[in-house]
Image 1: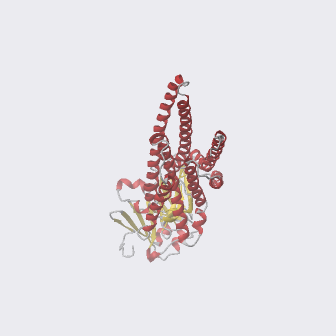
Image 2 (image 1 turned 180 degrees about the vertical axis):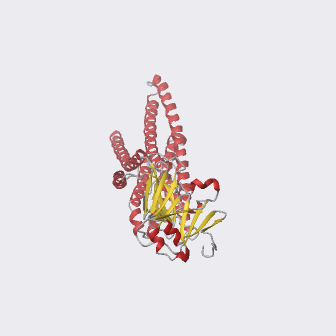
Image 3 (image 1 turned 120 degrees about the vertical axis):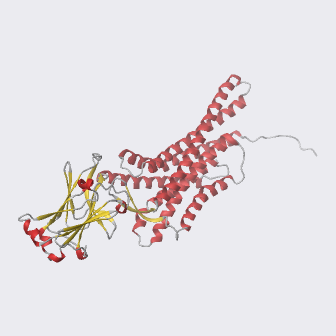
Amino acid sequence: MDTTQFEDRTHVNYDLRDISLKVNNIMDDALSAAGANPTLKIEAHPMLPQNNSSVPEIWLPKDALGTIQQKERIIGLVCYMQHSHFLLDEENIRSTVLRIEISGQRRLQNLKSPIKMIFKNTQTDKDYKSHLVCHYFDEYDWAWKTGGCETQNDKNNTICSCNHTTAFAVLLIREPIAEAHWEILSYISYIGCGLSAFFCALSIIIYVFNRNHKMDYSIAIHVSLSGALFLLNTTFLLTEWGATVKSEWVCECVAALMHYSLLCCFTWMAIEALHLYLLLIKVFNTHYKYYLLKLSLVGWGFPGVIVAISLGVKDFKQFYGVTHLSMSDTNQTNPVCWITDDSFFYSVNLVYFTLIFVFNSGILMVVASRICKMKQVLKNNSKFRAETEGKSWGDTQRFSASCKSGLTLLGITCLMGTTWGLAFLGSGFVNYPILYLFCILNSLQGFSIFLWICLSTKKQRKREMEEKLSSTPVRTSGLKSE
């Protein structure tokens, strides 16, 4: 712009590979010719003649131009062919990106009379939940913003009025979550996580005070899943607080701990299914040495290995820290401590969850098939109950235990699987039924496992009492021979 030779021309056009530049030399005569009109119309240069309709109409305020000396009144209008270097997240740019520059690195800002730009609406695929909004590109924060710009929309045009010069464009913005819904969902999330953590803690306390050497392994596995949920819910309550702490390591620790607890929840879900398979299908009534210890090493250790590796590559790639979560179709963001890399988030969490959910579904189908076969066996044995009373009674107990265990796993898998399926597959889009369903189901996780542990503990006590009453001491009498 500073080296352009105008000679007798009022403008010079430059056609480059990715941009077109029109350098305008605005003389005092041009300002006088505008008469009483407070603005002066100038035109940008399209990169391709057939794209002339995509170039906006531009009016600059005369009072602002009049403050610039004539020899320095050089205005550059830049039109960009590609939007790729302006797409920082998931912006939906619906117009030409136009930059207005003044020679000598001068900036027009805080203008009393705004710059007016009219962008033609060439795309008509927006729905009733979205609208076109004028934005400017902040080169300091490297983000699209709306400050200082006003938007007016009609059927064919979007009119932008901005009080400064920089890069401008029209972005398609979807309607944000209504403030009332946002507050309700926040309350449900925090209250629900608090209640879930409370019931998980109660489950652990009940297990600790009622633990004995005859305690069913299934109850211990349920309690381990409760422990993972308790850790997940408590760390979730700390994510926003951690993002406000100045020390970066605090937020990194909260994010890593939350990721670890999430993976632990998934792993213990799989262990629930594996235990049911070993109990009912593979090796019924077979004792495994250090069974709970081995399961605990997998349930708590395997997620720890994944998180430890993720933390170990910190110098190469930082996966945990402050991240701004937002719906992809809104402008609302919220700083929290979580995974900072989206590809890592989906490649680890979504794949891990999918594998475990498929595994649990397969186990449920095998168990359902086994229960149906056992039901048929009981039906056939009922004809000979008098002769095989003991065997039929044992099969009945086994069938009842199989049904209850299968229903337990089905409930846990459906509850947690549905919840986290909604979290992953429905993330990023405003869908009120999914958002409310996710928050409510998430609140029920800890409570449902708490109820099952209470019932299981009660049945365990009842069974022990029955065993004590049934095992009456046998007294023998006789003469002691000398």
